[in-house]
Image (cartoon, rainbow, N blue to C red; front, side):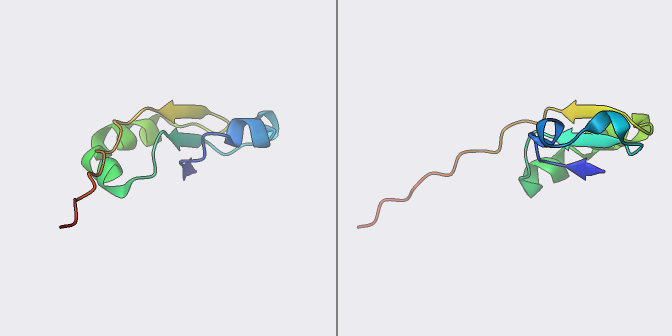
Length: 68
């Protein structure tokens, strides 16, 4: 399972689970799309019961435009 819920390890008892979890540090699609190789690598390493956090770059900050 791939998720961006960083609190899932505190919300669920993961020791009894047989699914693999890959937790992303962001849910911003442009960042995920631009970092597919590390994500696919993390997924390929996932084994039943494993837990991995994948740190991705922060999304660029949006600048507010000044209205005239």
